[in-house]
Image (cartoon, one colour):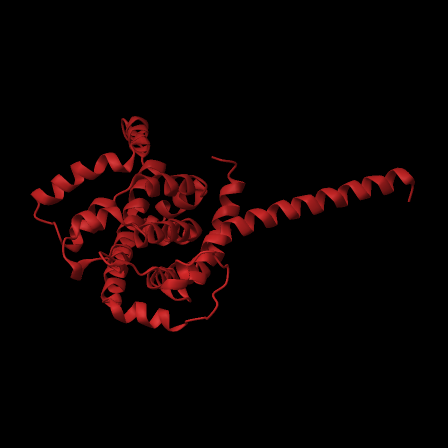
Length: 284
């Protein structure tokens, strides 16, 4: 190996070390809030508020997780969040597949203009829709009901756009062959298009579920009773006039993350496939 090639190898090694160090720092920065939540969840409330701040608790109080579960109707909050997140995810997937297929495959007058208007709604800040949506829900008598929380957020445009882009990558020849065999549109969608689109459906399901599982503002506005509160809303009950029980609040927040983590683990293969396929589409 010549001196020039040795110098090039040393520069490459130095760049690799710098890149890995930068990636490690970014990863630690993203992981620190999670570490801090767990660290505060297993210490006493007095130690949480103590100065100077310690990264690790002096005494690990693992019973905080059980106390957080029993001091509030955590199981009820858990069930409410699960009902809302699962229903919104199921409706969103069905509606997104139907509308995405219509925009990708059906030819009708004004389709492009309708698609532009559809995508344009993504530019509207969600907070601007809160008051109109609440007025509609209130007029329909759905305040403090599950349909009042589920229906207004289950018909988003992001899912339809995502599915349309994925459906466009599926060869048209498959659908034409099925139509020659006598299959009708809905049969083609269910039997051919949807099975081929599982990576995108998995990605959409995960995003939707996580978004609704952690949704705080809309359930807080619509649900007026403590029995119908979701997990993010229920956790605020640890904040009282006597002060905030930060250790129980952190323990409850850590418990509430478990379903999302399990779902991400289950769907990780579909998510990787979806990212790889979308990269292969060249941003189509």
